[in-house]
Image 1 (cartoon, rainbow, N blue to C red):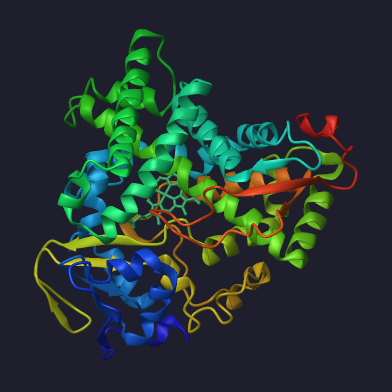
Image 2 (image 1 turned 120 degrees about the vertical axis):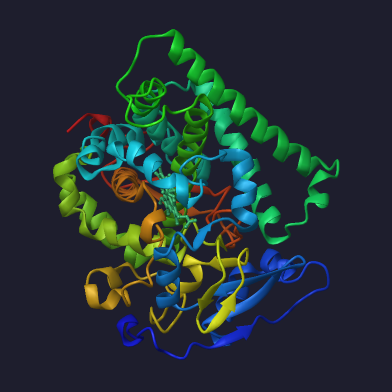
Length: 468
Ligand code: HEM
């Protein structure tokens, strides 16, 4: 199937999802077997009705319709149960703010994410990746999920905040993030507030984690105000609180919301992508072998990758792409209609919840033959990569991920750095099942590390940690 075959006049099919339960709607199916449930939907229609608790909602299943929705950010605005919950965490920051407030925020935050800015961070990313696996030992069991989240938190903290988070605080942010991501998902699929006001340990953990993140960010801002100014994103935001006469000054609340938004989104998704990549590679020895051959050739002598190596890490990038296709960290998102609208031949009243899922599109055989198979080679040929518009790990349109180019470099560099030193193996009987929360990926992946040939047993190779 090719996306361009479908013009605007196509007769779209509209259906209803199977497996509804009283009160919980499809929340049970989405909670218990979310990925199988999503994969079953395209057969029901291009637009499929589901119930989130008592709420009626629509899942958009065809790539052209998803693209149409994502490009009309005025009509399909951030909202629905997921974003209503996220607002308690990220306020009106760039991730969650409504369309009307989005453009100005995006423009202000964009500079460090432009290609030139991203290339300038490659060395820092490689240094942090080398440091993340520096103390691994041959045969050691490594918590890969924690190591990758540690890596991405360090990178975001260094790039956006000039390293304002000390080690203990960064560890606490990581801990909070795990509780938040877990809690957020259940609040999205069963959006019944009364359930989450109950005094259960899980509700307490969620509320505590949200509170701690706010306190930590307030402390970072207060500390910066006391100390010298810095030329980073926090510096830019604080400068903007003074106003320049042309635009209203940024408020203190907005500075806080932007930092929470960028710190959390910037740490979580790339770490999930990396953990998924190592897990998938361990199960696909041929792909792993090709990756090792490439990093050995490009990073001969175990040196760290620099910006000039990126164009030559072709297969490494294919592995990242295929991981993002096969196991997209952002797998399910909600929107809300801001006006009555005609969509796929159906009238959706204002306030309707609409969902889209990168996972669903990425696993549709019509777009990606052999969709469940992890096959990085498919990205070696543009044609084989599936129809345009069906591959959306970073979304599309005006609310596309601000960190897309940043993450591609970050994950490519980290994968190459680790793979040039270590081979990660699953422990017998411990291959993780795909069990998504608010994001998709292994949350507590423990693997055994084997040194790559040429790495002295029992430790990292000394030369490998040196700068290029
Ligand atoms: C592999 C890594 C990443 C993936 C797969 C990813 C995925 C996504 C997706 C799918 C969205 C759109 C959500 C929606 O449609 O509702 C998004 C938005 C966003 N992401 Fe990422 N992301 C990644 C890394 C990052 C990084 C590193 C940052 C920042 C440091 C970041 C910051 C953002 C922001 C600010 C938005 C909201 C953009 C807007 O509305 O203008 N992301 N991301």
